[in-house]
Length: 208
Ligand SMILES: CSC[C@@H](O)[C@@H](O)C(=O)COP(=O)(O)O
Ligand SMILES: [Zn+2]
Image (cartoon, rainbow, N blue to C red; front, side, top):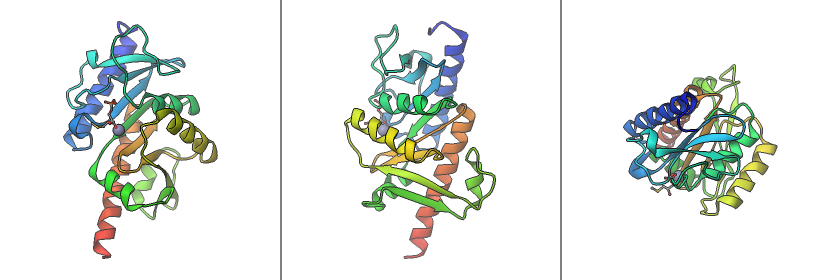
């Protein structure tokens, strides 16, 4: 599948997103993972441990719905199951980006035992797909950090059933996952979340 124009286009979109996210300081030290839908059964996904600001087509592989590599010796991202869970839950999902920014990491730790972070009264909330007004509440589920991706995938699937209208989730002390109908929309969501996280952090500093 990696010889197809579709794979090459999606892989190039992933590499381009990686350069952008690295330039913003949101995927330091090989952190983060990215993917794009190829069809209902297959996704292009970053191989594990790659520098996300220097991705090339050879650093991206195809995985199936179960997260297993297709015709590749590359080791898929350690967090593959979160990507496949999102694609299976959202038939419209075309791309997934995962970042490790300072603001997402610190904010998720400040939240303590809370199981979500709430953002409201910001104009930029309109950047999220489906939001037509700033007068909305963005709920961001927060999961404890774990290396048990099978369990985290199950917890995520359960939460998505309960809260179908979310645009991203946080893992505590770890980072953000967001998605969209295509890579451009997903990049817009990442930028919106990061802007809002920065505002939230600044509000906390100012109100000390
Ligand atoms: C460099 S530490 C970050 C990793 O543990 C992980 O959370 C991550 O985002 C990247 O893992 P990867 O397996 O490269 O997709
Ligand atoms: Zn991560």
